[in-house]
Amino acid sequence: MRHHHSFPNTLAAGLAMACLAGVQACQAEAPDQADAEEQMDAEHAQEAEGGEVHWSYEGATGADMWGGLDPSFAVCDTGVQQSPIDLAGAIPAGGGGLEIQWQPTDGEVVDNGHTIQVNMAQGNTITLEGRQFSMLQFHFHLPSEHTVEGGVYPMEVHFVHQAEEGDLAVVGVFMDAGEAHAAIQAIWDAIPGVDEAPAPLAGIDPNAFLPGGRAYFRYAGSLTTPPCSEVVSWVVMTESIAVSQEQVDAFAALYPMNARPVQPLNRRFILLK
Image (cartoon, rainbow, N blue to C red):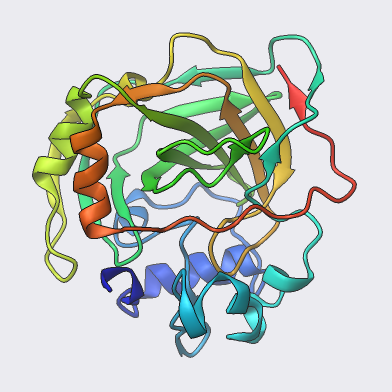
Protein backbone atom coordinates (compact mmCIF):
# COMPACT_ATOMS: atom_id res chain seq x y z
CA MET A 1 0.00 0.00 0.00
CA ARG A 2 1.19 3.51 -0.71
CA HIS A 3 1.30 4.53 2.94
CA HIS A 4 4.08 2.03 3.62
CA HIS A 5 6.74 4.10 1.80
CA SER A 6 9.52 5.88 3.71
CA PHE A 7 10.77 9.44 3.29
CA PRO A 8 14.01 10.13 1.40
CA ASN A 9 17.00 10.18 3.73
CA THR A 10 17.48 13.94 3.63
CA LEU A 11 19.49 16.02 6.06
CA ALA A 12 16.52 18.27 6.77
CA ALA A 13 14.27 15.36 7.71
CA GLY A 14 16.99 13.87 9.86
CA LEU A 15 17.49 17.10 11.74
CA ALA A 16 13.75 17.51 12.19
CA MET A 17 13.44 14.02 13.67
CA ALA A 18 16.47 14.48 15.90
CA CYS A 19 15.10 17.76 17.24
CA LEU A 20 11.66 16.31 17.92
CA ALA A 21 12.92 13.07 19.41
CA GLY A 22 15.38 14.80 21.71
CA VAL A 23 18.47 13.34 20.03
CA GLN A 24 19.97 16.79 19.77
CA ALA A 25 19.06 20.21 21.08
CA CYS A 26 16.81 22.32 18.91
CA GLN A 27 18.30 25.57 17.75
CA ALA A 28 16.93 28.80 19.14
CA GLU A 29 16.54 30.34 15.69
CA ALA A 30 13.38 29.83 13.68
CA PRO A 31 13.73 26.93 11.19
CA ASP A 32 14.93 27.78 7.70
CA GLN A 33 11.87 27.60 5.46
CA ALA A 34 13.78 25.94 2.62
CA ASP A 35 14.59 23.11 5.00
CA ALA A 36 10.96 23.01 6.09
CA GLU A 37 9.92 22.57 2.49
CA GLU A 38 12.61 19.92 1.99
CA GLN A 39 10.79 17.47 4.28
CA MET A 40 10.86 19.48 7.53
CA ASP A 41 7.89 17.26 8.29
CA ALA A 42 7.60 18.01 11.97
CA GLU A 43 4.66 15.74 12.74
CA HIS A 44 5.62 12.92 10.40
CA ALA A 45 9.37 12.82 11.03
CA GLN A 46 10.24 9.15 10.83
CA GLU A 47 13.94 8.68 10.31
CA ALA A 48 16.14 7.41 13.11
CA GLU A 49 19.70 8.65 13.31
CA GLY A 50 21.70 6.53 10.89
CA GLY A 51 18.95 5.47 8.50
CA GLU A 52 15.30 5.11 7.65
CA VAL A 53 12.80 3.32 9.86
CA HIS A 54 9.88 1.68 8.12
CA TRP A 55 6.48 2.17 9.77
CA SER A 56 2.87 1.99 8.68
CA TYR A 57 -0.65 2.04 10.09
CA GLU A 58 -1.41 -1.68 9.88
CA GLY A 59 0.31 -5.05 10.09
CA ALA A 60 3.74 -5.86 11.44
CA THR A 61 4.84 -2.20 11.37
CA GLY A 62 1.44 -0.77 12.34
CA ALA A 63 0.54 1.59 15.16
CA ASP A 64 0.53 -1.06 17.89
CA MET A 65 4.12 -1.94 16.99
CA TRP A 66 5.68 1.53 16.62
CA GLY A 67 7.36 1.62 20.02
CA GLY A 68 9.42 -1.46 19.23
CA LEU A 69 10.52 -0.53 15.72
CA ASP A 70 13.41 1.68 16.86
CA PRO A 71 14.72 2.97 20.21
CA SER A 72 13.85 6.52 19.18
CA PHE A 73 10.19 5.46 18.88
CA ALA A 74 9.98 4.05 22.44
CA VAL A 75 7.77 6.87 23.72
CA CYS A 76 5.03 5.62 21.35
CA ASP A 77 4.63 2.84 23.95
CA THR A 78 5.88 4.43 27.17
CA GLY A 79 4.54 7.98 26.85
CA VAL A 80 1.77 9.24 29.10
CA GLN A 81 0.69 12.24 26.97
CA GLN A 82 0.10 10.54 23.65
CA SER A 83 -2.17 11.69 20.81
CA PRO A 84 -4.78 11.42 19.44
CA ILE A 85 -7.39 11.13 22.19
CA ASP A 86 -11.13 10.97 22.57
CA LEU A 87 -12.28 14.52 23.28
CA ALA A 88 -14.73 13.74 26.07
CA GLY A 89 -15.35 15.35 29.45
CA ALA A 90 -13.88 18.69 28.46
CA ILE A 91 -13.80 21.38 31.16
CA PRO A 92 -15.23 24.76 30.07
CA ALA A 93 -12.44 27.32 30.46
CA GLY A 94 -13.77 30.46 28.79
CA GLY A 95 -12.68 31.92 25.47
CA GLY A 96 -9.44 33.49 24.40
CA GLY A 97 -5.89 32.26 24.29
CA LEU A 98 -5.72 31.61 20.54
CA GLU A 99 -5.05 34.10 17.75
CA ILE A 100 -4.89 32.77 14.20
CA GLN A 101 -2.87 34.93 11.80
CA TRP A 102 -3.19 33.10 8.49
CA GLN A 103 -3.23 34.53 4.97
CA PRO A 104 -3.11 33.25 1.37
CA THR A 105 0.37 31.82 0.84
CA ASP A 106 2.17 29.81 -1.81
CA GLY A 107 2.82 26.19 -1.02
CA GLU A 108 3.64 22.83 -2.54
CA VAL A 109 1.72 19.57 -2.46
CA VAL A 110 3.59 16.40 -1.50
CA ASP A 111 2.56 12.76 -1.38
CA ASN A 112 5.01 11.74 1.37
CA GLY A 113 4.02 8.09 1.51
CA HIS A 114 1.83 8.47 4.61
CA THR A 115 -0.49 11.34 3.69
CA ILE A 116 -1.06 14.26 1.35
CA GLN A 117 0.78 17.26 2.76
CA VAL A 118 0.99 20.94 1.81
CA ASN A 119 4.29 22.58 2.73
CA MET A 120 3.74 26.30 3.27
CA ALA A 121 5.92 29.32 2.63
CA GLN A 122 6.61 31.65 5.53
CA GLY A 123 4.02 34.11 6.76
CA ASN A 124 1.36 32.17 8.68
CA THR A 125 1.42 32.11 12.47
CA ILE A 126 -0.72 31.45 15.49
CA THR A 127 -0.33 32.91 18.96
CA LEU A 128 -1.32 30.35 21.57
CA GLU A 129 -1.42 31.46 25.20
CA GLY A 130 1.09 34.20 24.49
CA ARG A 131 3.53 32.15 22.41
CA GLN A 132 3.96 32.49 18.66
CA PHE A 133 4.22 29.46 16.38
CA SER A 134 4.94 29.52 12.63
CA MET A 135 3.13 27.21 10.22
CA LEU A 136 5.28 24.58 8.52
CA GLN A 137 2.70 22.43 6.77
CA PHE A 138 -0.72 20.88 6.90
CA HIS A 139 -1.84 17.36 6.06
CA PHE A 140 -4.80 15.00 6.16
CA HIS A 141 -5.96 11.87 8.00
CA LEU A 142 -8.74 9.41 7.18
CA PRO A 143 -10.73 8.78 9.31
CA SER A 144 -10.32 11.52 11.91
CA GLU A 145 -7.62 10.76 14.46
CA HIS A 146 -9.35 12.55 17.33
CA THR A 147 -12.84 11.45 18.26
CA VAL A 148 -15.53 13.41 20.11
CA GLU A 149 -17.43 11.45 22.75
CA GLY A 150 -16.49 8.37 20.72
CA GLY A 151 -17.73 9.82 17.44
CA VAL A 152 -15.51 9.67 14.36
CA TYR A 153 -15.45 12.12 11.45
CA PRO A 154 -14.62 11.06 7.88
CA MET A 155 -11.38 13.09 7.85
CA GLU A 156 -9.24 15.51 9.86
CA VAL A 157 -6.73 18.14 8.75
CA HIS A 158 -3.74 19.10 10.92
CA PHE A 159 -1.96 22.47 10.67
CA VAL A 160 1.53 22.01 12.12
CA HIS A 161 3.25 25.05 13.65
CA GLN A 162 6.63 25.34 15.35
CA ALA A 163 7.93 27.77 17.96
CA GLU A 164 11.45 29.17 17.93
CA GLU A 165 12.28 26.83 20.81
CA GLY A 166 11.36 23.84 18.65
CA ASP A 167 8.14 22.57 20.22
CA LEU A 168 4.93 22.40 18.23
CA ALA A 169 1.33 23.59 18.17
CA VAL A 170 -1.09 21.75 15.91
CA VAL A 171 -4.54 23.01 14.94
CA GLY A 172 -6.90 20.17 14.03
CA VAL A 173 -10.11 20.61 12.05
CA PHE A 174 -12.67 17.86 11.49
CA MET A 175 -13.98 17.31 7.97
CA ASP A 176 -17.53 16.02 7.46
CA ALA A 177 -19.35 14.97 4.30
CA GLY A 178 -21.40 17.73 2.70
CA GLU A 179 -20.79 20.27 -0.03
CA ALA A 180 -17.62 20.15 -2.11
CA HIS A 181 -14.73 22.23 -0.75
CA ALA A 182 -12.97 24.38 -3.36
CA ALA A 183 -9.62 24.63 -1.57
CA ILE A 184 -9.54 20.86 -1.00
CA GLN A 185 -10.21 20.30 -4.69
CA ALA A 186 -7.33 22.56 -5.66
CA ILE A 187 -5.03 20.43 -3.50
CA TRP A 188 -6.42 17.12 -4.77
CA ASP A 189 -5.99 18.30 -8.38
CA ALA A 190 -2.31 19.03 -7.70
CA ILE A 191 -1.35 15.76 -5.96
CA PRO A 192 1.87 14.34 -7.44
CA GLY A 193 2.87 10.68 -7.38
CA VAL A 194 4.49 9.37 -4.22
CA ASP A 195 7.94 9.42 -5.83
CA GLU A 196 7.40 12.59 -7.87
CA ALA A 197 8.57 16.13 -7.14
CA PRO A 198 6.30 18.39 -5.06
CA ALA A 199 3.66 20.23 -7.06
CA PRO A 200 3.48 24.03 -6.66
CA LEU A 201 0.25 25.51 -5.34
CA ALA A 202 -0.19 29.27 -5.57
CA GLY A 203 -2.09 31.36 -3.04
CA ILE A 204 -3.63 28.64 -0.89
CA ASP A 205 -5.62 30.24 1.94
CA PRO A 206 -5.54 28.21 5.19
CA ASN A 207 -8.47 30.25 6.48
CA ALA A 208 -10.66 28.36 4.00
CA PHE A 209 -10.25 25.31 6.25
CA LEU A 210 -11.48 26.99 9.43
CA PRO A 211 -15.07 26.48 10.59
CA GLY A 212 -17.35 29.43 11.29
CA GLY A 213 -17.09 29.09 15.06
CA ARG A 214 -13.81 29.49 16.90
CA ALA A 215 -14.46 27.29 19.95
CA TYR A 216 -11.82 24.62 20.45
CA PHE A 217 -10.57 21.78 22.60
CA ARG A 218 -7.14 22.30 24.16
CA TYR A 219 -4.81 19.67 25.61
CA ALA A 220 -1.14 18.67 25.87
CA GLY A 221 -0.13 15.77 23.65
CA SER A 222 2.25 14.29 21.13
CA LEU A 223 2.95 13.69 17.48
CA THR A 224 0.47 11.13 16.14
CA THR A 225 3.21 9.38 14.15
CA PRO A 226 6.66 8.09 15.10
CA PRO A 227 8.63 9.19 17.04
CA CYS A 228 5.47 10.20 19.02
CA SER A 229 7.38 12.99 20.81
CA GLU A 230 5.34 14.65 23.56
CA VAL A 231 6.05 18.20 22.39
CA VAL A 232 2.66 19.25 20.97
CA SER A 233 0.15 21.81 22.20
CA TRP A 234 -3.06 20.58 20.60
CA VAL A 235 -5.94 22.79 19.48
CA VAL A 236 -8.88 20.93 17.92
CA MET A 237 -11.77 23.02 16.65
CA THR A 238 -15.17 21.93 17.95
CA GLU A 239 -16.97 22.61 14.66
CA SER A 240 -16.27 20.78 11.41
CA ILE A 241 -15.97 21.92 7.80
CA ALA A 242 -17.74 20.29 4.87
CA VAL A 243 -16.13 18.34 2.06
CA SER A 244 -17.94 16.25 -0.52
CA GLN A 245 -18.13 12.47 -0.28
CA GLU A 246 -16.36 12.38 -3.64
CA GLN A 247 -13.45 14.31 -2.13
CA VAL A 248 -13.30 11.91 0.80
CA ASP A 249 -13.35 8.98 -1.61
CA ALA A 250 -10.54 10.51 -3.68
CA PHE A 251 -8.29 10.64 -0.61
CA ALA A 252 -9.35 7.15 0.44
CA ALA A 253 -8.26 5.84 -2.93
CA LEU A 254 -4.71 6.87 -1.97
CA TYR A 255 -4.83 6.31 1.79
CA PRO A 256 -7.71 4.04 2.89
CA MET A 257 -6.67 4.44 6.55
CA ASN A 258 -3.94 6.69 7.97
CA ALA A 259 -5.17 7.40 11.50
CA ARG A 260 -3.53 6.32 14.74
CA PRO A 261 -6.00 4.85 17.28
CA VAL A 262 -6.98 7.04 20.23
CA GLN A 263 -4.62 6.91 23.21
CA PRO A 264 -5.29 6.92 26.97
CA LEU A 265 -5.96 10.33 28.50
CA ASN A 266 -4.15 9.38 31.72
CA ARG A 267 -3.94 12.35 34.11
CA ARG A 268 -4.48 15.06 31.53
CA PHE A 269 -7.31 17.53 31.37
CA ILE A 270 -9.13 18.62 28.22
CA LEU A 271 -10.18 22.27 28.19
CA LEU A 272 -13.06 23.68 26.13
CA LYS A 273 -12.33 27.24 25.09
